[in-house]
Image (tube, rainbow, N blue to C red):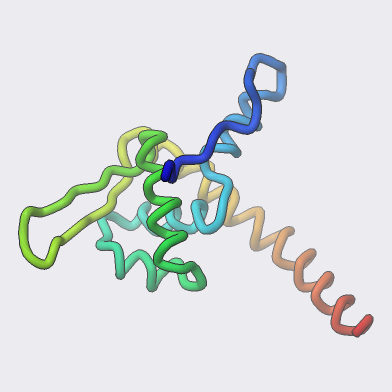
Length: 126
């Protein structure tokens, strides 16, 4: 079973395509949070799972494999029993830091209020 998803588009040549290509690399369940938490440094799997929160072990594994295949995350396995695995950002992954911090700030200022308002409206409709 292939755990790495296929790209959405066959070509990324248009004017806005670099934006879509960038978003494609870290869109998905928990990928943004995974990358954000790895900004703090190297984390073991369970520590990362605790920080990300509401994500299954299977989904976290899948997303980490995709991020690793894109060259954004490095996976280091230590030859011991039980196996010890650590995840960290690659140099390319670390270059996302200003983008991730900007997304966090934008989310605090704009996305969170929008989503909170939507939840309140849905609650009133029920």
